[in-house]
Length: 313
Length: 313
Image (cartoon, rainbow over all chains, first blue to last red; front, side, top):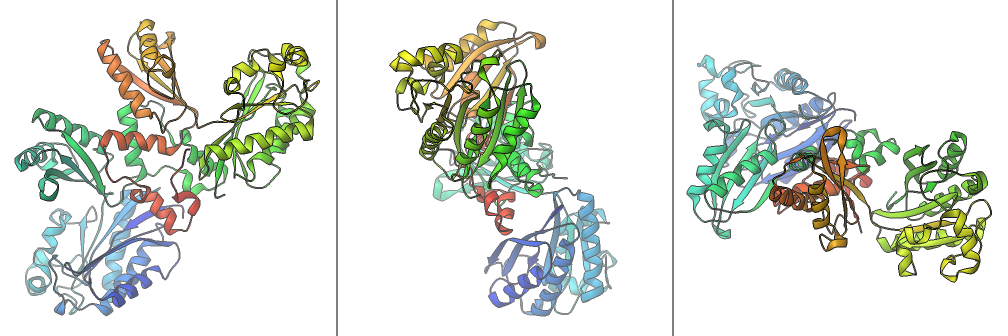
């Protein structure tokens, strides 16, 4: 696998293990596809699958799963606390190695078109794949959910899918297909019970309030731990790194007379995002993967797939 | 390759490429051995080879190279600025993955014994493989070099080899075989031309003057750059990490009113040593290789050799 694209389809089924298994099996029934994770949530009645493929294989794999989900899931009887509009609800593609975000935009648009052509499930393009700038925001597309969207799509041109007719699939609804950079979920815990401190720091550092670019942040309470937390999504870690975010929060916390207790990464993180923290903190002038023992060993063994740096966008 | 041991034999030949090639070929003429680096130094008249093998293969590979070097190199005609006493001068074994330092002590002692038995080259055990505590220090063994050692070994019991008779090999001299932890060469550049600042910081932080354990440090001048440098060897990065050293130097530099300009790693570093800097700086509470995208991908692909963490002693 020369190129690596990550795909994280969300399916509106979180209880029936047989159906979930069948969808995952369809996904894996082709070359060059590797399953990384399956998170099944009964309350959300939703399953989040994380897999990777090459630039050539990842779209086909997603389509196989979308087709199977359309056969198995009926939105008319689906109940769950998470907003949704389709059997396959969202399908983001993320560049990981030797592919650009633009490649993922292309893959997303092709999958969106084929989803309509092969399964008659209309599709909306979101995030970087969006053609309508308002549709960059997934919530703008999904806000009506399945039940209201299937009414409004019939008469409101603004609700018209990017691919497909002005009508949802009777059981599989509609699917949002998009492309985005790798998202890192990162939380910093503060040694105080004063929620206003976390909220003030979140406001100070998040992009939407003029803080650091590509950072979303909120302040939340961790009652059981007697702490508060700045909970963040880093939507482009090459633009604003984990280390930059940490240092900014540390500075604001010090100003408020509060200590950082710990921090945590939720989910997966590209290795490079961790290494960047070290490079930045140490002011390392000569860092390259050639310095890394394991990379040199992989090269010596001719294991090209493991020797390269991750390229993110 | 389930286990990984690094070996860095030094050969007393730095000009004749044919001989060097022949030694490296001998080294690689067996299973489970991978060449990482060959540094040929004409001034030192010395070649430093870095290779890895499994616990089972690494010693045999070293022995093949030691035997070939004994055939090809004659210390009687060897001139170079680096101290040396043998055709194969030193052979350290370093635990990298799923092996302990004690395993490397065993390998070193077996190789030392076989070097004498197979090639009649007497051997000295050094660093962690040493039986005489004074011989932990390589310079204690090598200080007389080939020319004086071959005289003194005949009559001074303190110079007697660990394996072999009280007489050097007539052309191949003697070889030091040892085991040690991974050594990281790490330098921090200070934004001043005042060498006394770098020297004072080096004294403050190095183990020999009561500073940080497993840290060797000196202050040196970088005339061309108009800076001074704290030049360090970290002999056990699990005991004192790169991050701890950096923070200690930063604190001392700030006290002296001097800024850290940059830092650099010389040679190779295990990935974990870089990751540790990030974990420590971020106070990451939940770090494990399971968070790393590439590790999960390697697991999913069944590539066990790439998925595990490096284990250093």
